Amino acid sequence: MAGNAERADKLNHTLNWVVDLFEKQGITDWFIGYGTLLGVTREESCIDGDDDVDICISTEHWDDLYDVLMKKNMLTQNTYYIRENFICTRKTEKLAQVDFYICDVNEDGDFDDTWEKVVWAGCYNEEGNLPTATFQGREVNVPHNTIEKLEARYGSTWRQRIERGTPAGDGYRNINVL
Image (tube, rainbow, N blue to C red; front, side):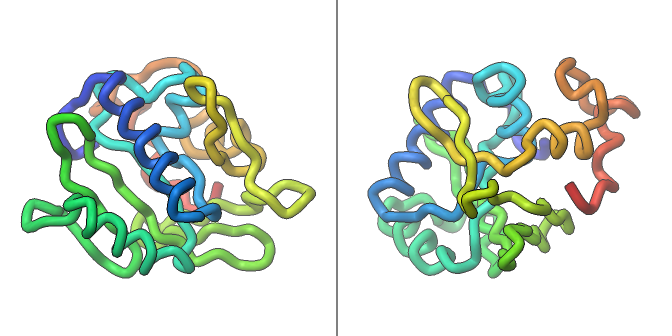
């Protein structure tokens, strides 16, 4: 968490906005990741006090994503980063910042996040699709074997809220494959 803390209701509204945007644009190869995945899985909500919504998305959608975010005025001079492997939107009064981790995806469903240097391995289920989880009455994409990935990233205590700045809260940063 590098930005300012946001309320869970604003983060939840932002995640719903992203899902609506993807549905309208036909963007399908994405999933919630990192702290957003942790919160939605653990609390059925984004984490109160987090600073952004985290989305892992295939590189095949980069142009479509960039174009629609520009049209919606979400990428401006206040935008932190626009790179080939990462897009960070500006926050507004109604929307929190969104971090889009642009991932190379292979035929095994491995999402290679070269920004964070993390490989989300085997994200597709047996049918070759991204599974979904229920979030506020709608379906959001999640990686296959979500619980195992959360345990690999955050440890066996991932279900507990742990404060950042503590060894337990920051111990996950050197995990490269989930």
